[in-house]
Length: 110
Image 1: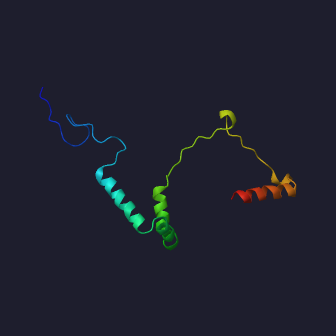
Image 2: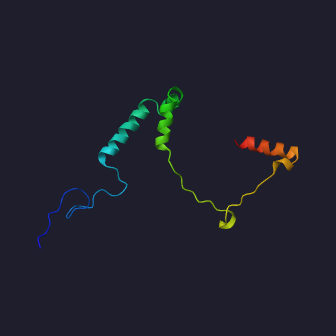
Image 3: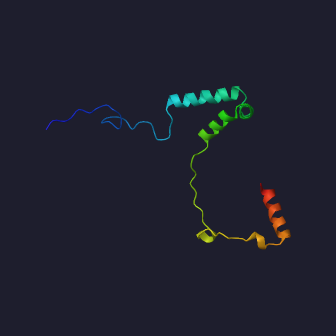
């Protein structure tokens, strides 16, 4: 049986080193990020972004959409790790002064 030659198409080839450690950007990516950061600070940093948000809201929102995570994973638990309790309230049976207090509390948290 003859041994097949090793194709050099990527992956972990025989005799190849371990490669770049996971999470370490390549040199080009790192230098491009540094250049972008330098340009960002050169045009005014956060003040520039605030100006762009007002003058070009569509482009600014596109930027936000690219940097904010698309999904957030969360696990909710109730008291002592149990299920989350949900309470129903019939507001029509509450006195008006209680409703006013609830609305005032809601407005103060927004």
